[in-house]
Image 1 (cartoon, rainbow, N blue to C red):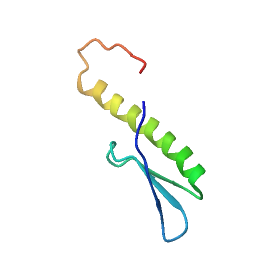
Image 2 (tube, rainbow, N blue to C red):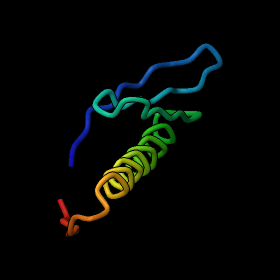
Image 3 (tube, rainbow, N blue to C red):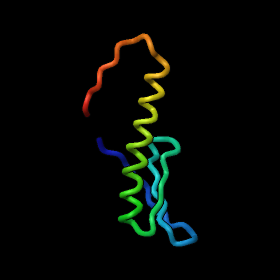
Length: 68
């Protein structure tokens, strides 16, 4: 999957990375490369957490895993 990410320079010199499509999915790094690596991890964690919430909300339904 592809996601758009915004990069913003913070006052302390860190780069803040945010994925607008995923509310609250934000990370940072000391430089652009690190910020992008960290936001990729944050996106993966965000998607995993949402998937877990969906499973918990519908316990009596059969679930199948699909790779995208």
